[in-house]
Image (cartoon, rainbow, N blue to C red; front, side, top):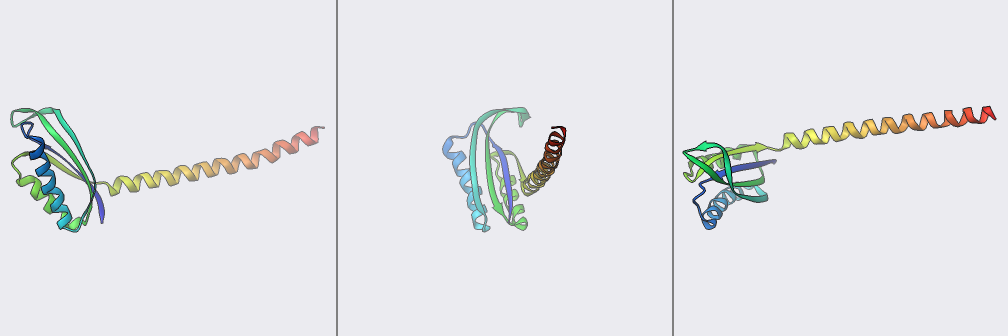
Length: 133
């Protein structure tokens, strides 16, 4: 399974119960496809960067989930078919997680190299001090 997140914007005129209904529909779709919900974050009503369908505001919702790659298209289809959803995007986070892990390995390797160089330099300094006395 891969880690995904979807951010979608719904109509600003919807009530909290209607937004919860849309979130429930998406989460139940994910769970029916044998996925696992990691996090649901409702950002609330925000101003859009540009008008969508002559609207300047929208309610933002972020859902992070685990799902097989082959089943993501079904979640995308559900979001596309819902008329209350203005825009949506689904992003695979595995790539970002792998990049962070790779960067962390490089950083650890650099730190180990720096520590080894410092250890090698310390005995040389002590040895020159002893010879000077």
